Length: 438
Image (cartoon, rainbow, N blue to C red):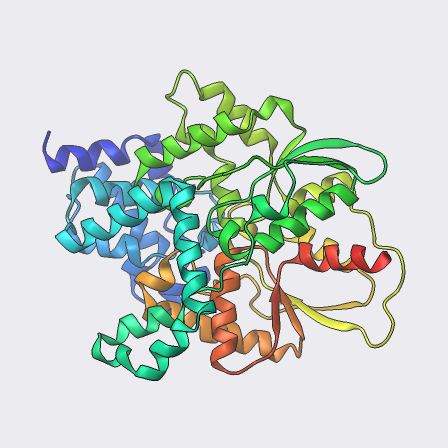
């Protein structure tokens, strides 16, 4: 089979009506961060869909230019919120990136090595990711990072190496399995039984948020089951054109957590949750997992969504002193991918002693976008600077958000301008409020 055949077949995996659905009305243009920056039609959702349709029609073949355009797209899905025709850009986007990878139009030895090391090796076994996390933790706690900075050795390498090193995250001293019991009973009257997803990078960097999520669920009448050694849900693979691996990871998650046994399966990471809710589309041709994936999608709930659905318990008591000023950043895959915007605010308003200040351009992408801030640093940093300016304009002491990628990216942005604004998850603020009751 030729590269051209592969290109056509991948985009034609979609119902062709999805490819045709775009009306070219332009309503998506003001919502697209890349188009807003360049004002080039090809950098807009409308322009990208036109390219995808040309390939699906057989009028064009995937080229290096097409590939670069698909990876210049953030995948923030703001265009889906703006679109009056309801175009499924998320599906088109993932098919287009899979097209790029199968056509090998931007293949190189170095790129192949990086993708194999990260997507096919590191992020397919959580034990490997934990090992890397421990190495990073040692690098920081033993003072090796400070030694590297003082020695100026990074100046011997390309500038980008130093920039990436500066983005090295802080790894938690304990991972989720060490902080959270396998079974956490409901506090008070049991109302529901739920399963908790701890994620991959989330487990290493924000295991404390996972612990807080379980605490909040228990405080709201949920028995919580947290399986050991969970792995990547496959979102990183699906968003980067590795569908076969994404399907393998999805099957592994369903084998680990049987959806029929729980009232809900809880995610607290926006990017993961958006992908986790679409396992059926990923496994629709799998006879064994087709029905299971449908059940899974129906049970998957973002933590804010679930608490709003069951009725979040308001913490007892009123905080003393001046109200803490909090603003809220909308993670793209929560507001655009999952259409969850009111629920996080509802959660924050349930906490006494918080003053919620609306963030200007709260729906605008921060530039993290999975690994976009690594692969497209120039555009990512422009978006980050814009986001940090808006956060600081609110006068808030805390900025809350529901996605680990956003949290890391915005933390780095605030650190650059020496701001002491705290970055946290809304569920952590709620868990702290419950803690103050005691």
